[in-house]
Image 1 (tube, helix red, strand yellow):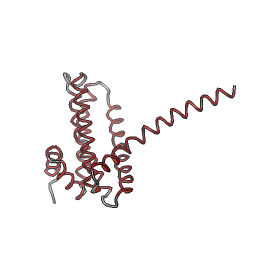
Image 2 (cartoon, helix red, strand yellow):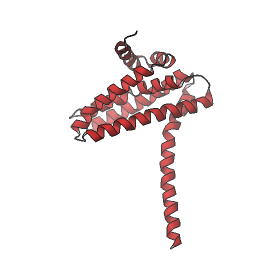
Image 3 (cartoon, one colour):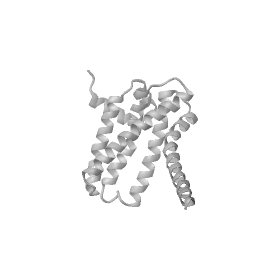
Image 4 (cartoon, one colour):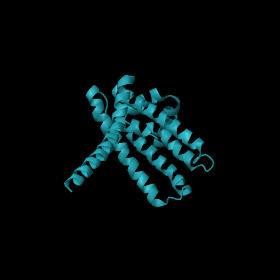
Length: 186
């Protein structure tokens, strides 16, 4: 029986210091259990952020459920889109890669909990840097799991982000068209 705690810490260290080799290991051996543990650890890091912002328990539960659905959505859509390019890779591999690629976002949650940095321009700057870093790690996870090149990995990473934006635009435009139609009846 392997030590999950030690493996998780080694994987986190590897994602930060040597992402290509670590994502090769994470996605090929399907470290989805370790990925879920990292996700749970990240949610625990978000508790101080909610307490300091005085949001209460509902904020934490809402964020936790929302992030869980986003994680599953992102892994499922990415797996489906990646299948258009290659038959390599597994869902459990990309799910683990997704969990580990969001490590910079989890660090951002800790930064926001710091009273001097969290709500300032410094916190916003750190948030943008962590978002870019997380997106790059996501592309690396896609490349390692599906053996895609950089461009195809970028396309696969962008598509799950574009779908919700297109849905929101469609609802907005549909609402305007529906409103104009209702007004034309009178």
